[in-house]
View 1 (cartoon, rainbow, N blue to C red):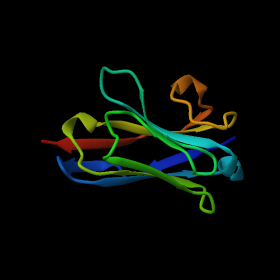
View 2 (view 1 turned 90 degrees about the vertical axis):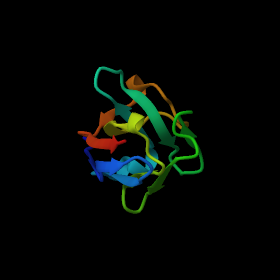
View 3 (view 1 turned 30 degrees about the horizontal axis):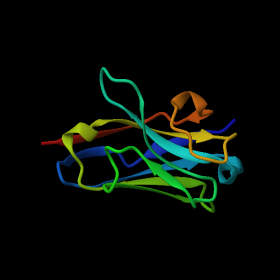
View 4 (view 1 turned 180 degrees about the horizontal axis):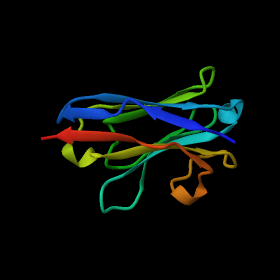
Length: 125
């Protein structure tokens, strides 16, 4: 069983920055693609960013390109999401997830095997 624990959420003003972290409990982390999703009230969960097993490939939603950066440290079993130039529309619960089966980065939430509990990000205008 893989456990994922997110941290780093909070309240920030528009234009500010936050860095989210997601720590995995198992060493299978290094063999898993990882992704960040978010879900705002009344909306479906959406893909934000993903990173391949090695970290060589990354993928971003159009809405966050140029503002967010996903990275990973396989030695620490941790994936990060650096969020800059935050906007009120970025307000959501952010989840990390792990894909144990794909060598690439998939954007559909149903493809991911394990999920963290989520961390709230609130951006005030």
